[in-house]
Image 1 (tube, each protein chain N blue to C red):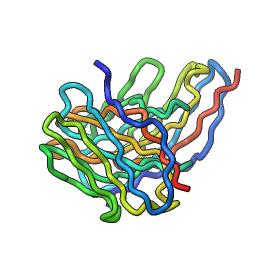
Image 2: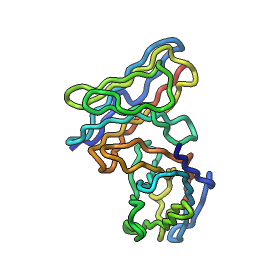
Image 3: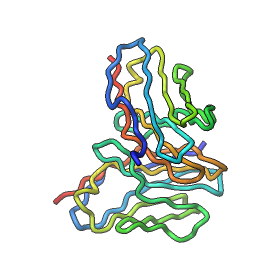
Image 4: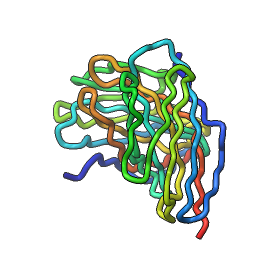
Length: 111
Length: 116
């Protein structure tokens, strides 16, 4: 079992561009959550997908959107990138009340 | 809204010694979970220990144990016989105990240094 995998591991984008991050959940998990971790801070919840629908959302603007596919994998899209969007983006998968497993994250740098 | 506070930005410990990391939280819920996660430089969040609020007994995982004080809303992590590999960021997290998966609410973290 490969656990939670995220791609890419690093990327650099220019202000105003759009970016798509990808996450494959751990085998057997049906729920994917996305978190943003700014430098020196704890992760902040962006949103969660279950059964291909957004089930919960944190305090993030509409520029942040996502999708979940029938195989439970997920994408995080960010439009009109700002310098402040530079962060580590973490994906976590889970099943019911069981513990969440995290991927290694995608480091996004906006220049 | 639930909040999690870690008042120690940095802590250090000598190898083989014991260290305690502090965490307080605020919630109006009666049923919830508390977690300690470790984040080494590799960036991946690793679950260290989990506590269900309805359980009075403190959770223990090998060298890691917690002191859960529900009335005080306190949840500290004790690491015994510290090892060099324990050096990392440690995050305290809260999760409501509802049907299905709920979001995690994290503190700002404590950076633990282990001195040889």
